[in-house]
Length: 93
Image (cartoon, rainbow, N blue to C red; front, side):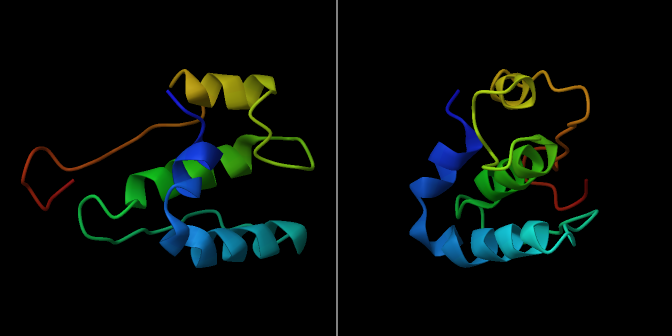
C-alpha cells in the first residue's frame, strides 16, 4: 500500500485541508480529532490516513514514510490507528 502522502498527492483538492493540518502542527495545535465528511471516492479516506500518519510520525518532516510509525501505518499495523467506516451502504458507523 502506498503511504498517505503519496495518496493525497494524487488529489490536489485536498491541498487546503492538508495545509491546515500542517499549520496546526507547526503551531503546536494539532487537533485531537478530525471529522471528515465527503462524497464517496473524493479522497476522505486518504485524507484521514494522511492526518493519522502525520500525527503519529515523530520526524520533523512528517509524514516521512521511513520511520517505524510510518512503516507500520503503510502496513496497516500501527497499534494506535483504528479505521472505522459504515458497512456497505449504511450511513451509520
